Image 1 (cartoon, rainbow, N blue to C red):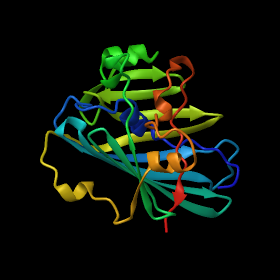
Image 2: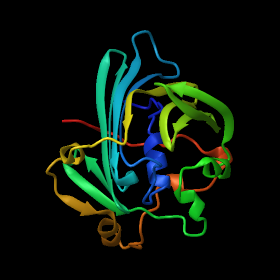
Image 3: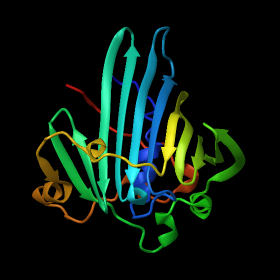
Image 4: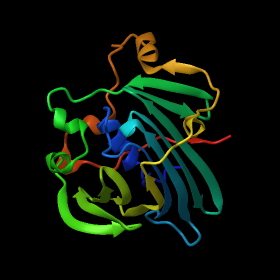
Amino acid sequence: MGNIKYIVVSLLLGFIELFGATNRYEMKSGIVEYEIVGSVEGGKKGDSITGTSKLYFKDYGNLELTDEKIVQVTMGEKDEERTLSKIVGNKMYSVDFEEEVIYTQKLALDEEDGAMNVKNYDTFVQMGAKNLGKEEILGYKCDVWQLGQDKIWVYNSVPLKQVSKSNGSIQIQQAKLAVFNVDIKDDKFKLPPFPIKAIEEIVGDEGESAAPVVPETHKKEPAKQEPVKQEFKKVK
């Protein structure tokens, strides 16, 4: 994609990383399917960003999978990107489709402030978000939050819509289907049969501390928080 910087709407994943604890959700299970559309700053006619994202969770988020696919067309060239991650308890599995490997890491919790591990009203306030009232998405009454340049519509701790802006670009991710407290088959949480490597081991091999990796979203700078940026790899 060259030097073009565009917003990857993975704020949903950011929330998952930030609140890496059991009972991340106020509902036992859920299936949410999103549509993604966006534009790139300085983009020409025909340039576009489109995509989809799926969220599956059960046991109040103790088991969870997020699968996001992005298609970007720039000057007639199309790039397809995919981010697939799974959380089991306090461990995250991230799939690298280019290297055909799955990386694992422990989710670092905020031990000093336990409230930061739960996505409730008070947590958003602590993050520096501003409550803008309530709006309905798919018939669900959501709290609307302004967090930096982003707006997030949240229903019982689950984001159903978000509008992200960065450097003149904009991207919208909105749920087109959302059902909760339903039975979800185990095959929805399957990952590719790639070998698994622990991030701690890789860091240790490089001669650095093998302490748990803290996702970028754990850094507390609420007033300046930007959308979570992911480095995508081309899907083979």
